[in-house]
Image (cartoon, rainbow, N blue to C red; front, top):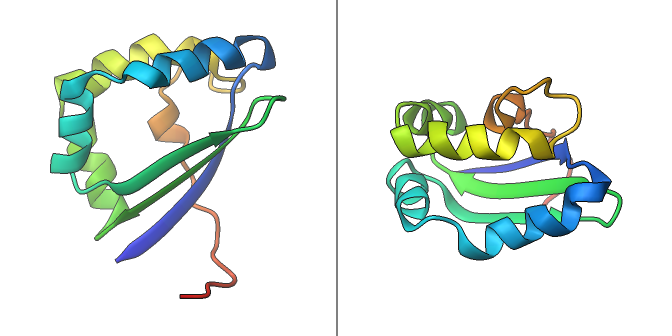
Length: 106
């Protein structure tokens, strides 16, 4: 199992709206994430817009590729793109670069 952590930057002025959008994630998006191997997935948002994501999966590259094949992910990414800094309208999931794990206490 891989533990994956990544950082993205939400526009600070849209942070509250971004949080609100995640209170009602589409059921079909939740199902697609689960079916694609995303487990124990969390997002943490700092007031200045720093977003920390964490998930567990058997293979992150495969999990990303599986989500990229779903229509619901394309729709979700298109709706969420304007919330992020530095993506130039691109999809946030394409910008998820895992951080290197340097310590873990199980």
